[in-house]
Length: 350
Image 1 (spheres, rainbow, N blue to C red):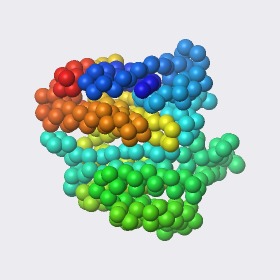
Image 2 (image 1 turned 120 degrees about the vertical axis):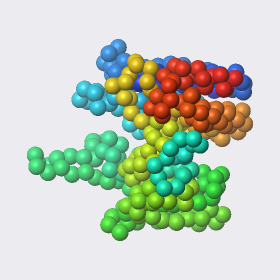
Image 3 (image 1 turned 30 degrees about the vertical axis):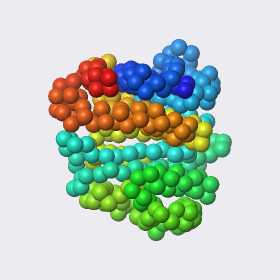
Image 4 (image 1 turned 135 degrees about the horizontal axis):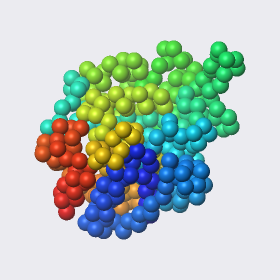
């Protein structure tokens, strides 16, 4: 398997280094035959060649079996510079953003109940102006005092994200919850629900329910244990997944992949945290868990059991480190920096 590593900006290089070291240890232990190539994106690429995402890097991602993207500081890019995350999602049609949220033994959680759920977010449409138009932007200003944002919902995108959710639920606790706002946005949300309901008919062994997005936000606080797989549109999924992971213990503990039919990108849920970059303070768990999800995606795609076992071993090792206060990072009340946490992980993986 050929993997590509794009370290990104801010704390990206630090947590990517820990993640690649863990992958190399898993490679040796499970005989994965990984070949990892490193390329630049973001500010390092901008400084070197004037672009944040070059055509060469894009084609390298297209050719790879999977790739890992560290956090990027796209708000610090000059006008017109591409956000590598959004650019890769669009160019490679990474339409499914899969974001698990789970509580860990020994760590505090902030909801009333423990949670173990996955939010499956449609990744290419909705209100996101950088990706919902074939040409031009989905957001524009006809006058200096009027801004318009166009929301795009298609039957094709709704159906395929629903299929991802139901396939995933069949491997978990066999329940899907569709989140919407059809009481206000009748046409767009109605089209989304039409397609999800149609897919639900193909999975009679999976229970199906619907929730309004505002009630869903409240239920994540009050009774998150009732949910298994949640499927929703782009913006709702973005907001709810951040809420869920924070309630479960924090964004630093949440993995994430952006997957399509042919490509998969592992990406931490959190940002680049430039204020702590280079200080050995970053928690690498989110990117590590995301890399584990990438291994799982590759294992499913290629029927490679070693990859699935490697994902399970990585998740088990991380859970063990998080359970013990002595082997947690500082943001979780422990004493370990990024490098020492990585070293402790390698010991467990051995």
